[in-house]
Every structure is written in structure tokens, then in C-alpha cells.
Image (cartoon, rainbow, N blue to C red; front, side, top):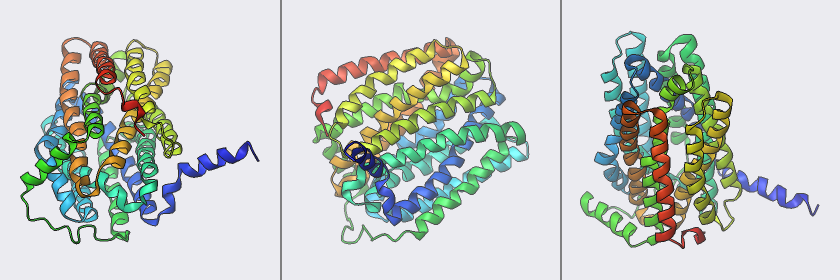
Length: 413
């Protein structure tokens, strides 16, 4: 009994957010939708590479998808603080569903061109600019405050479970039936999360909070809040660097599968799934440790492990070993991403949550397309290996600088 009890407590804590009916609806609906999202993402990347044979064009698509973050994300945070976040999500998810069906139709009819994909990626980015702040800010409405970190970690678990299954299934569907079916199935998958959102029994969080101030003054208030909170400022700065120099490496995986590993669309799916396996392991670990008080230390470890494993991955040409190392890359990346998100959510005030999450989302989704464009151009002019090594080296420098500038970050709970 003395040995088994602590283990049982940790297992119970891992899934504690699922005891809330609204969160169960969100979890079940979102995970189905995410399977479809990763099917489309994997198929779209390989379709672009087949059409263009250009790693730089992969960067262009990533840039088009992220550009709306700079244009609309902050306003999306204002909207998320002013209206029902549930209703906003129904609108954005429905828009994404329509875009998936449009891409499916273009592919089925054989008329799809690279510029179609860029345009649809941009429109999807517009929907995401309003979706991301609302999605992040919805979490406190689904669970009690003491279980918020667990819910955020389980969100990461669902996301990374989809990364494991979605790319593999997407690659198989692509190989057997074509890209059009991947896009069509993604469109259908949005019905699950839309249904879950409609079925939720949520209080109207906007009652008594109607604002007469302008959107610009609300955005300014959000930035002012971030600048006066050292912990939040440090975390948002970190996620900016990770997005710019680290997470953007995902853009290169289709080219990496072909040029470095000598594979095909199935190899691309295996790479994405290996990253997802590691990310799932990392997310489950965070969920089980959600009430422990060493999140800052775990974040610090992740900041160094992630670029080191990227460097190791960049010199490997054997697929089995590449998959193993990429699993560790995925685990360390999710440690950084999920812990940063959880620490911001637990330190932010409720009345500015939407705007702060929009700034967080802007830095993550906004810098990633710039990083995608940069890494794609380096790969085009030099090599995929050198592009990955450049990003990893920059992250190592930034991790070291962070320890010097914010020495107390590792002590944050």
C-alpha cells in the first residue's frame, strides 16, 4: 500500500480534467477534429512539394498561413474578451470546415494549383487568428481553476495524439486514394467539435463586462499588462524565439523525407508521427505533474534539450534512428510549448485573458511563418541540414541568454 498509493494518485491526477462534462465534450470533439487537421496538414505539405519540387515553396505556404496572425490576432483577442468564446469558436470552426471542403473540391477536380493552396492557407490563417485566442481562453470556463494546468496539459495530449495518428492515416489515404480525400475527411471532422461546442452548458462570461472602449485601447491595455508582468513577458519572449527558430522545422519534413532520407509520402507521415509520439509522452508527463511546483525547472531543461536534439537529428540519415531522435525532439518541444502556455494561463488575470492569449498566440503563430520562410530559403540555397542546424544553434544561444537575463525563471511554479 505504501508503494502503490503515490502511483495511483499520479495516474488519477493525469486525467482529472475529464471529470468535468464540458471538458469531456471539448476533448472528444476536438480530438476528432485534430485528427482531420493533421491529415490535411500532412497531405497539403506533400501535395505542395509534388507540385513544385521546392522546399522554399513549403516556406511560402507556411508564411501565408501565419501572416493573418500579424494582421488579425490581436483583434481576435479583443473579440474573445467581448463576446461568448463558445459562439466565436463555432463561427471559426465552421469557416475552417468550409475551406477544407473547397480545397478538397479543387483537388478532386484536378484543377488545384500552388497559388490555390497559398490563398486557402491565408484564409485558414484568418480563421485561426480569431480561433486561437478564444480556444486558449475557453479553458478556464471548462474546469475549476485548480485543474486548469491539467486541462491545458490534456489539451496538449489530445493535440499530440492527433499528431501520431493523423499524419500516418493521412499519408496512407494520400497514397491509396489521393490528397482530395484527406481534405474531405478533415472537413467532415469539424462537425465533431462544432457539435461539442453547441452541446456545452456554459455560463455567459460576458455579462456585466460590456465594453465601450475602442478595440485599439483594449489592445493597448493588453500589451501594458504583459509589459508589467515579468514572468509573462519572459514566457512570451521565449515562445517567440522557439516559434521563429525551432517549431518552424516542421515545415521542412516533406523535403527532409525525400531529400535527406530518400523516402516518400509515407516517410513524411512516419516523421510527423514520431514527433507526435514524443510530444504525447511529454504532454502526459506534464499532465501528471500539473500540481507539482517545478514547472520552471522543467521548462529550462526543455529549452536546452530541444535544440540539442535538433542538432543530433540534423546529422542522421538512417530512418529508424531519425524516428527515435525525432521522438525526443517532439517531447522536448511540447515541454516548452505546453509549460509556457500553462504558466501564462495560471498567472494572467481573467479580465485580460483573451488579450494576453492573443499576444501569446501572435508570437507563436506570427513568428512561425517568418521562421518557415527563413528555414525554407536556407534549405533552398544551401541544404535542409544546414537550415535545421542554423535554427538549433540560434535556440541554444537564446536559451543561454534567457538564463542570464531571467535567472529566476526556473524557480517559477
